[in-house]
Structure formats: structure tokens, C-alpha cells
Length: 233
Image (tube, rainbow, N blue to C red; front, side, top):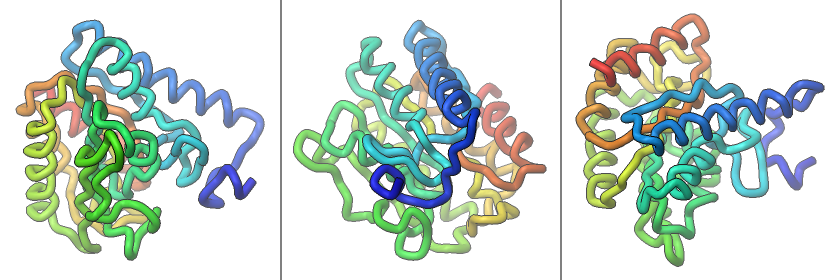
């Protein structure tokens, strides 16, 4: 088991694979919808996916839903795709999948892996290799990051994505940056997720939202909907 899983937090029960496949199909369907001309789509994925790499699962993730969506966009005609990961934790699996490719850029805003899961990837000096050199951007932030600091990192990431000239964007939408999230240490409040959606709308690119983390369960729905409401407004 340890060969295929990098963390001991993914249980497998009778119905696990069915749920995993349904989440991946949701992301794929959302990408197909956008590839067909829609301006945006939201994939309500559970389990999440951004920690799953090419050959390992972990971090509650089994198949990488965001990577599946990005690959679908590429195969459907988008010449360049960007994945923007705003989850509290680094999308190590997504980085691993595209680290050697220049056609899918990956940018992540997350807690510093020196002190936070997944620890082994997500550092600022990881830029991509081979054909993917320069197509990877990590923006690690310290525990206690306040909204203004977080949104400054978002501006940096969106400016970088604009320079990459992405034709479509996949957003790994984790809302565990929420101040009351039980396993996270950023300070965003519910209204900040509306602000996030409004800012993403101004990018003016087709966008697939793929649900990632969020563990303050009573506020999870509100925070997700706030992003989408902000985007649509």
C-alpha cells in the first residue's frame, strides 16, 4: 500500500471507487461543457483530487480531478491551459503530473510546505523541468496569512497566468483558507470568497471550477457558493 499512497489518510471501502470515478467524471463533464463554448462550469467533486499524482494517491485524493479537466481542455482544442490552485494545501499531485509540460501551466497559493502538508513539494524554487521549465509557480505563505496578503499573492498568480497566455483556466477551488477551518491556518472570512469570485471573473477566460478541500462543514456550502456568486455577478 505504501508504494501507491504517500499518506495514510485515504481509506478504501466498498463504495470508494464509485465515488472516485463519479468525481472524476464530474470534472471531465465540466471541462467538456466549457470546451463546447460555455464561459464557466463548476464540478462538485467529492472526494477531491489535487494531491493525487501520476502514480500515487493521498491527502484524501485518489484521482486528480483538476488534471483530468485540464487534459480534457487540451484534447478539446485549447492550446494552452492553466491550473490555478487556491486550496490551503499545495496541489502536489497536479504539479507532479504537469511538471515536465509547458502546455499546462500550474500555479498554487498555499501554506508553506516547510510547516504544512504535503511537506515535500510546493516550495518557491520549483519551476518545472524539461518542456515544463518556467511553467510552474508556487506561492507559499506563512501560517496566519491575512486576506490582504493572500489576495496580493492571487494578483501575482493571475499576472503570471496572463503572461502564460492561457486560453482556459482550471481553478482547484479549495475553501479551506477559511478562518474557522479546523485543519488550516489562514484567515479568510466568508465575504472574501465572494471577492475571489469577482476577481476571477475579471480574468476573462473560460473557467472550470473543480471542488477541492474545505473542512469547516457548516460553512463549506456558503463559502463555495460565495465564490460562484461573486464570479457570476
